[in-house]
Length: 127
Image (cartoon, rainbow, N blue to C red):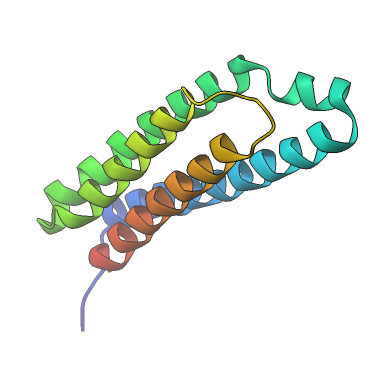
């Protein structure tokens, strides 16, 4: 039987929040692609680079805090490596053209999935 300290519960909560934000990112990316195809004006608003820059900054901050703390707490580097790889894919996707081909959306969704997987590994390792 294991006991959960308040500290590990708090950081597991950060992983849950980060996974939720990853889900919101996927919804944003897919909605932007659909809106861009249907209504170019609304799609252009949602594709504003500030959304991506702020979102990536939040993802990096939460990732560093939750995944870094996880390595310190449970000693496994794999969740942090997986999350970092996902963040790298997301950052790389920001540099792809917004030309309607969907490549930026595809790579962002892949990166978000890898990041969420890293947070899930981290959450599981903490418990």
